[in-house]
Image: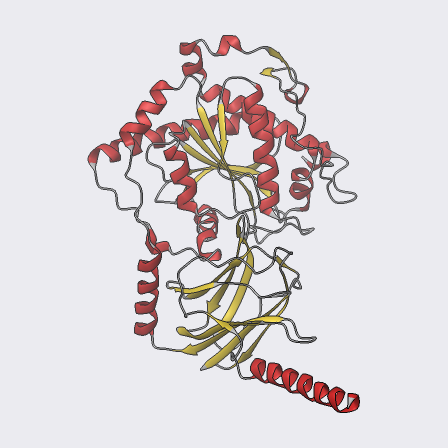
Length: 470
């Protein structure tokens, strides 16, 4: 009797296992499936443990292509198309991508290439660049079975251009929420009531958008965040300024949202921090940019075009915002703002020239989207070139960062000197000589990092002689 019961139990277990495997192989019998082009937020994972994407692969041809990502557990997700350029965006809960360095560079079939990364706290994103117009035929998650991991599966099919654009428009309309009104009067009231000028520091790139990569693999998004945080502490230590950061973590922020934040808080100055890249490894030095529809030179135009691609890289719909502003009062404000931005750029160049090497053409202008706030003076500072080994070593040097940030504090203080003098705020600051600026009178902060993390060191053999590297 016991032998009979044991035999029946084995038969039942075998049948159950076979059913589960069959469910996985048929493309979704037991899969948690979502509607294609679901514009909602991804649902949270069933468990709180860390989610990891372990491998990814592409199969198929130019008519039908399957994109698969292996995961440590099931996840909720949302998927939608974006046009111009044509992309498929997959939003997921926050996860770690344990993929090789070459992942995403090579496509197949309908997939030209793809990229991935953190979009915001709690949210990761995969962006698929399409080789031609395509639609999501099926999108589902397979649960883990035996030794096989959970799998995110996206099936793409070729469609004509009209159908793709129509679906992308429908998906955009489902996602779009009304934007707040201009609020110009409220911003003016905030400025008038404010005692200290408000500076917004914008650490370029972040999250899924890593920015330029250095000779030794340094990522621009980390350089800009570290430097912006240091500059914030130094500005606040003067007691003369209020300072806000557009981001204080490794998250992605759309270009227009950075500008909108500066306008929302009625910033008196917006400083966007970046690190440059060039095809030639010998090109180096800091550059300061202001906005203009006509670029000062071909290099400036190319750099602006590259920086403006941040939203494309992260899968932001560029059609959701518009720059069409025809009001004559706004146009007048824009002209005044451009004049002030030019003054701020010149002050920045004059101050940092004594500390670090400048580019041969240090003040340039081009159509940077992040500098287009019509009522906030704005500059973009490229600290150096990630593609030059000397500049990369300097940007990783604690001494260089400290001195350059101190020089920028002096530039900002000089820009606001008339206002500070009129308010009497300048007299309240205690002045002392700064070794970093050869004895010039500056406000000295503590220089103590906000956390106890070990200082970032430059590549071996390149960070020791700062004087030579400059």
